Length: 144
Image (cartoon, rainbow, N blue to C red; front, side, top):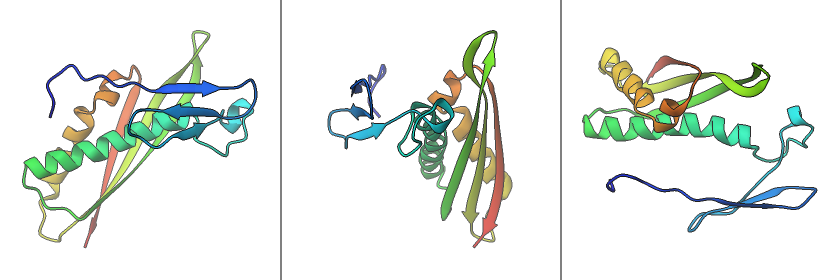
């Protein structure tokens, strides 16, 4: 890992109508548009969807690193995050993020240890730690 602080830069351009284009050095360009809830077409990633995806992605990638460092064997991790956007004191803000994790493990795996590693992955996610709202992680296991 590189020493802190880390810096991330994304450039966005848009015209009065249509999609916005997101660019960052060395990455594939992506397009975004408002979600259906804001009158958009709902056919591209939206800022709200990208933000929600980033929470699930951060937890999964953190778990992968933590599991490797802990020499924990697992087969697959699928996570989905549901975000709630609401009005609070006249401002739109996310008020809750619920992440469901399904971890596929061998029959002899210590599920209590697996749960602890997943909870550590969520607790150490810099995106989750930036949120000022309720967060909930539920964990299910699938035995291979």
